[in-house]
Length: 178
Length: 459
Image 1 (tube, rainbow over the protein chains, first blue to last red):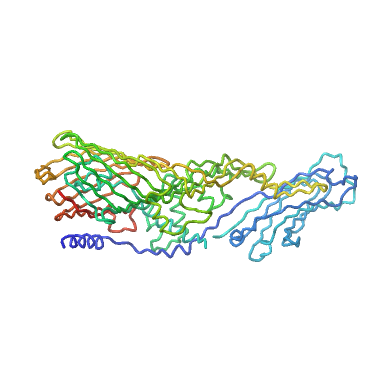
Image 2 (cartoon, rainbow over the protein chains, first blue to last red):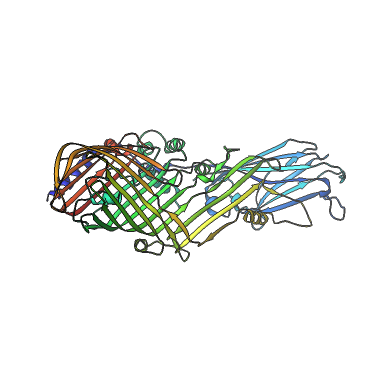
């Protein structure tokens, strides 16, 4: 009996002497994080001989392609908000070159394509930026391949022995919201 | 379904309190409560035998973290939750941590063998977990790397361990002379669950590149996660019954000892000390370990424009990364060390003397008042944690004792606790609570801890 009274006394003491300020745990529902990740993409340096076939014939364009499986993860795909692409080019060639960057789906259909990048001859500081809002360009999330084509529209022949280079660098800033 | 908001809610609620882990400064060397023998097997006893009320003889719960309080995050004010979370995360350092410790005694009993020796034994279950704040990895998740060029995100900040185990123990307390009492306790640990990630290394850095716009580095990455009792036959164990069953003489077992002493430097001056949980658990069943290690430099995917030899760049990248930063799973057994605790105290008794009945029907005199200091240390993965306590004890009668403590440690300079031990007939009741100064507003408190229990004691 005495034990019960003692227990009750202690319980009452702690209940009556303790209190809390107004709290609202539902605030956590409004919490969101919006990280921004910067990632390098493709890069290359080409020289004039790469515009020639093994038979020595000058090619009007060369292209390369890579798989891209970044959107295979459904969580990443669902949380993606926006993509900022950055391209930096140094063109030492004596001719204008056009770059086509295409994002392709599994069936090689174009999910998104940048406007053509027209790089003037000897432009050593070409920069390009493009933002893709995912909400208005949802097809971007079907991308599984990226292709970069370099087109030489010049009528004049290219001298394969000239030691000039064409440098291409790219990166992307990825905006997500969780 | 993974819900990061619910996880964050749990994280912050837990984070909002702080704990002293197993620093039971109120219980230590107090009123000859049988449970003090679990903190110092060399504590003095003056009873013939005791039996703890099964499941109710000893319960303690302490949880929380350093750095902030619940109201910092969830007070109803006009600030956005994002701002509040950012402010809290900015305040936290990598030494801040979340800790949880609960113990519940299933059985606690003891009996006097003869005038000099008292044997005590029992079984309790314990959950003990600590996680340090991985500030850089959190920053990488919450903010990303875009605004942190050249910053080394330090992966070694990932440091946590969690244990759920049962402890079967048998101890002996021997009074060598009127002046000296020594004791030792042998423990058999049975781990139901262990999850730990310690001794990780590595950094992730993004810098302006030369071949491409940016270059990413993973340097000296070596991250491990060891688990035991969590996965069986490639499936998570999700039945509480299995966990409970494994706390008693399960396959993942270990041994440990406690040792302690009490010595009377004079009639009024007493010095005590103990080492608790010097031991380990060997995990060998239901093991699932994960690891990843290596270094990697990533500039991006370099196109070759070789029409005669198309390259699968993505596969090459994956293969190269896997080769240089291999990750894997294994079921290798491993050892986890228990968090060893050190206790010591110096107590000066004074005031009017009283006498109390001892087990041999003699009467032992004791002072009504005592003051003293206690020092506590626990070895944790990052640094040892220290707590310094000043205390005052008062015996209102032979059967009613109280203790007030003032504790200073890494987290607080004003933690006041109070304990009461009462014996009515053969029933001993004790209750203890910490951080009374914060009771007027628990949400703003940095710590809450509670210990209580009921014993039957025969003098």
